Length: 239
Ligand code: ATP
Image 1 (cartoon, helix red, strand yellow):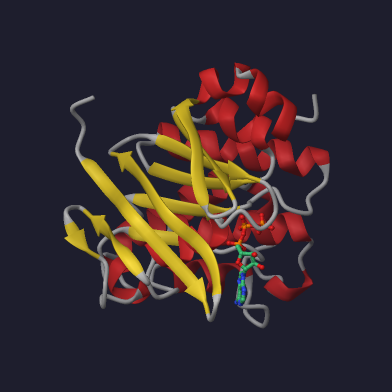
Image 2 (spheres, rainbow, N blue to C red):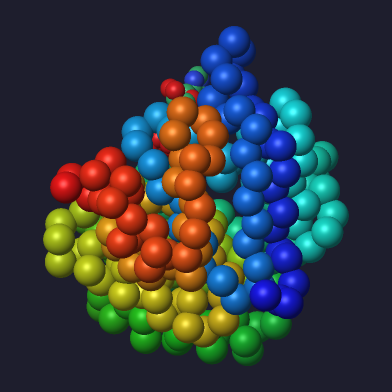
């Protein structure tokens, strides 16, 4: 694989006080890939994503984005360079409308015409958001808020999108819709790092995957190979 490595995580350790949540993790994400990080509750997936975007301090090791350490850069600066995270729990601006939330996603940009085009693109991906464009985000359903969070992140024109458990707490139909859109976004050329407890769906979409257990990566491989692996099936697919 000769594509550029956009994210290089090496020897990453993260702790909360005395609790070692991430204990020396290595992985990489190359340009154009969709990489899934799976694992049980508390395995350290969210903590890893937070460290990658500078939201959680790195105790040891490093994260390089396009060859440069993310240390000391801050989430805002990284977003400007194309590294955008959609947090677990979504974090939309509840007292703003859908349209205003989407506009906020483009706050780092000045290309007014392209912003308007991207708004149309987001409404194309999520017709529901267009129908509700003047509704306050706080009054939307969980699935609609996940759509909005994804739409808002796309308004920043990310090069790498980090998604933390986008399917969490959603109805089966909404889960289908969200994974469909993750696939669409990837098809448009956005590089994706996806953290999911829904291992079967996440691995089915992934070029490659990593399995995390108690703060460490224990398996890696092509998404399809991991999906077929008996150990993965027993531990994460309830077989
Ligand atoms: P889940 O799928 O349940 O979100 P996860 O794999 O994302 O799990 P993390 O949220 O990264 O796991 O948590 C890893 C470990 O760190 C857990 O033991 C958790 O209790 C602990 N942890 C997470 N956040 C904090 C915090 N703010 N303070 C103390 N411990 C924390």
